[in-house]
Length: 422
Ligand code: AMP
Ligand code: GLY
Image (cartoon, rainbow, N blue to C red; front, side):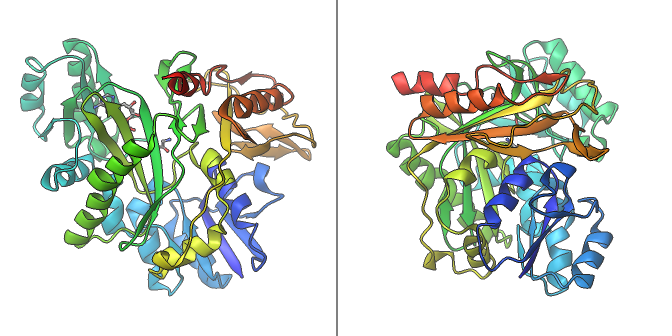
């Protein structure tokens, strides 16, 4: 069987490594992939947004199954294109991917179907938006409607920050057409939780919960990044909270998408906040999260390809999806300076024997050696029977990996460990 995975980062590396556990799998192609995953997949260099080249590649190579992971090709209709060629895919079609592609759509969906979320207003007129932030409670949260490389959310502590956010999104079009509309919403407080789920539109199976660490610096300070580390399971996700989320958020979302004629098939990601008033939905992603995938999939016991095919064929109800009781911690090693400017091209030193998995997010090959080639360079995931042990093992492994300008947070898991005390 020949599979292709569209995408090229650490999340894709984790998916590819997990898929490889299936014996029927002969070849995995990554589009584009990166040099660091060459031992696990054939990296084609084809860009994840080059839908013509992706379709051509799939046809020429007689691909049996495709997994589309990043948000932009999903929103742009990559799955629609491949499905039209008769290639079964894992991932939502464009109609369903709008759940991440438009925050106006997703907020309106939550409101219409009574799914708990932050109170909000939508604006497509900049003057009306500017007027609104003169009066609204602070801090307030300004969000560009469309995809913005994870940078379209601004938490404004002051009116000036709110004005600046609106001007850069709506007037200067910092994120292009994604800023034609904005959502301005209530600031919520509480521990954050990520829950990825498999759904085929009929059944929804939540995966092990996790916690991302989005800010660049220790103590959740500094700029927002693509994610500096993650742990799973999330200790704040008690059985009681899980049951509430299922009943108040997950199942209502699946049903709402069906009612809107936008059946969602793939991995639906719920970004949640545990507020004093209970769990509230911050955002949906139409795909696996990065770096949540790097802690969730190592705990999956059921064959990933079997689950994915069951989702595509709408027979998820027939499959038992099992996770181990262990805990996982992933520490991201980035290039110093990320998410701002950084240097790359430094040789990676990764010992062959490590008590952890290394998922390469951004590497290239130079004279036969791997060198850093991105902001986030790699993720190092350790699994153990408890969270403190998993954290320790992950940092032990990280201390043995090096490249010239490596930077990583020292406190991945600290907030979760605090959550275990209460
Ligand atoms: P998003 O791109 O929607 O994931 O938002 C990025 C981050 O901004 C989230 O992970 C939260 O930490 C934060 N955030 C988004 N919306 C809110 C909100 N209404 N209140 C507080 N923080 C928020
Ligand atoms: N970790 C959050 C995301 O993938 O968007």
